[in-house]
Length: 105
Image (cartoon, rainbow, N blue to C red):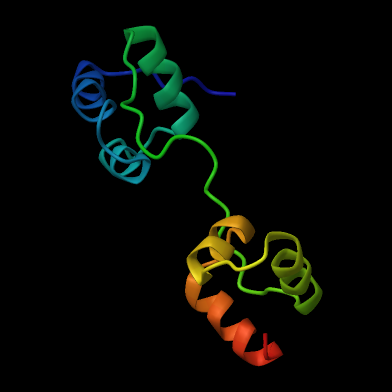
């Protein structure tokens, strides 16, 4: 395995871009470096990336509501508005309206 040493110009570019630029921008600016090499050198230099969009993506809301599920909720809770049902089932109100109409509830 060959070692590609970091030049002062490359370190300067890394210092400027690493905290805020995207991974692709950094790799375009440092063409002969891998992402792993950039991360390793940044760690040596004490650089940290700003955290944006951290964590897992949120699950999309459900797009389906079952007839039995709606009947059970209405039977247990009594009179509920569409908004209340949508909050309890974690479904957008327009989806609740669609299935209430479809099932005739």
